[in-house]
Image 1: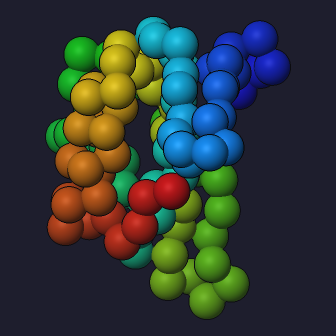
Image 2: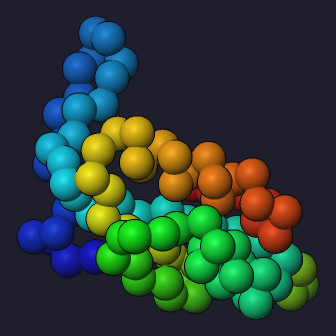
Image 3: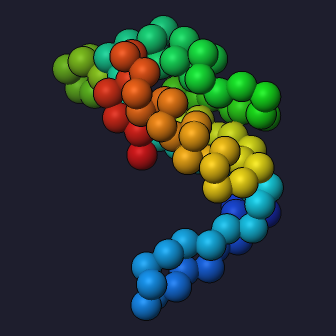
Length: 96
């Protein structure tokens, strides 16, 4: 993700809320047991948005693989909806 594509963040320290300017590019880290499963989960759950999927790491024992998934979020509901869809997919163990 290049610096010019990073979302503009405003954090309210008192309320603990994050305000973003939409649309923005957002990066999820998606972790699962197989590369094929994570790729399939992203293809099944992220629809109608510009998506970049790149493998980022594998665990030393080969039990997990992580991907950077960069998407365009149109609003807060869209961003959190993508997160929840990825998080609940059976081939995904964790979404950051």
